[in-house]
Image 1 (cartoon, rainbow, N blue to C red):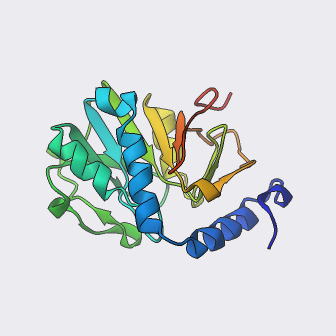
Image 2 (image 1 turned 90 degrees about the vertical axis):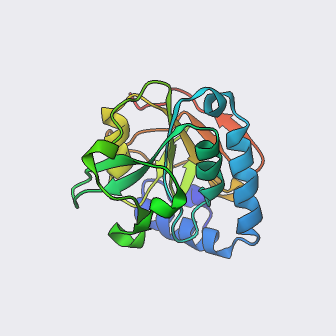
Length: 198
């Protein structure tokens, strides 16, 4: 198998590499728990009033511990809904994990009640999914652009959750790609440089 250093600018090959590597990982449940606990120990989480967080799908780091803790800490918790196929996404408030049902792409999501849409981003942290990250905060998503657009339109403290073996040397990025401010693995919290491209 190629190493990630051999992919250069080819996102498609890196996606295939990252998927295969993620699928081969053992003990993902324990790794996810350790990653979530590292995130929950961060000052950014402790000090935030609102948390926007994805729901894990197809081998992603399981965020149920983070969502449950944030709810018990009485933070506002928003979960994303993909509203169209052109990259439009909004977050809607949930009061329990029971508020979720299978939606777009088979991912668990809340109902799109307008009164539940998150519009107050003061002291807000967002947790972003990806196949892999590099230490500069560049992320390789699934090519749909939902999170890049959301991060471009909202000023938020952003975290990427990543199995340590999927923190790669280099993720190719384009002008519209948004970096995250922090990458959290089971072993470390990496403070990334810049937080945004440009």
